[in-house]
Image (cartoon, rainbow, N blue to C red; front, side):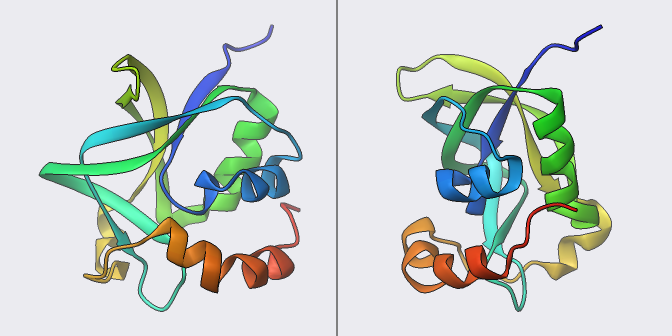
Length: 139
């Protein structure tokens, strides 16, 4: 029996379609979206971010539509123990509210976050090439 495909809200490196393809070996339709009630910060000593619940915060990202179960398993492995896949509701540019899941820093790892904001443009310019070169795919 096939499980229902899931929407995934990406707010960090996975916002870049090249990274999503590197992780899942697949391309998915996506739309710009925002997630209210969460703030994004860089993980200490890393080039990627995490999000945590913060009242009145908002995180911009994209929502990948209809992500299959096999790809979800790859994403879970990619995100690792630092993150917990969590159900959320996001708002698209067209003001549609969509159910999705996203990867939130687990409460016990919140100390791993810096106070620095994370920016996809800065990541793309400074870190994407090295990130893709060092990422070997999920084993």
